[in-house]
Length: 235
Picture 1 (cartoon, rainbow, N blue to C red):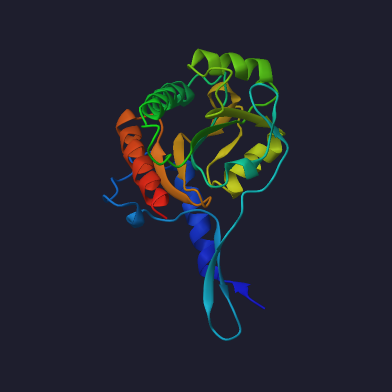
Picture 2 (picture 1 turned 90 degrees about the horizontal axis):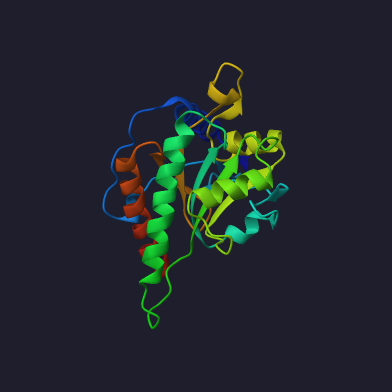
C-alpha cells in the first residue's frame, strides 16, 4: 500500500510557514511556464516495489456562496486558470492595496478578452476568486457592494467573492492554499492573513506566489497568466 513520504510532508509545512510570514518580493520566473514551480499540498506516494508518484491534494468541497447569494462549487473551476486571494471587506490594512491591484488585473483581463478575434481559438478561462475570512460581517450584500465598488458587474462571473463558514475558510487557506488566515484581536480589523495572490493552473496546482500589495509583482503575475494560457491552449 503506498505511503506518503515524510520529506513531502515537511516540505509542505515549510512552504506554509514561508507563505504566511514572508514579505519579500517573490523572484521573477523564467520565460516559459514549464519552468514554474509546482507548489502546494502534495504527497509522494511510495509503493512496495519502490516506485514513487506525486499526488496533489484536491481542492475540498465546502458550502460557499458568491456575492450574489449563488451557491458555488469548486468543481466549476476545473480546467480554468485562477488567481486566488483571502481578504475581508472591512480590512484597514493590506486588503486595500490587494483589492486595488486585483481590480486592475480584473479590468485589464476584461479588456484583453474583448480584443480576442472571434475566429481564433478561445483562451483558457481565467477566474479571480477572493475568499472572505470574515463572513459574519461580510454578508452577501456587503460583498456585492464591495464587488461593484471595484468594477465588477452583476453579470460578470469572472471575479467571485466567496463566503462560507469562518472555520472552514480559515482551514481552506491554511491546509490547501498554504496561506495564513485567522482571527487575531491584536491585528488591524481583528484578522491576520497573507497578502499573496496565488496562481492556480487548470489542473488545480499552485504555480506561483505573488505579493498582492505590489503592482510590480502583479505585472509578473499577468505575464505568467499569459504563459499558462498559451501552454494549456496548445495541449
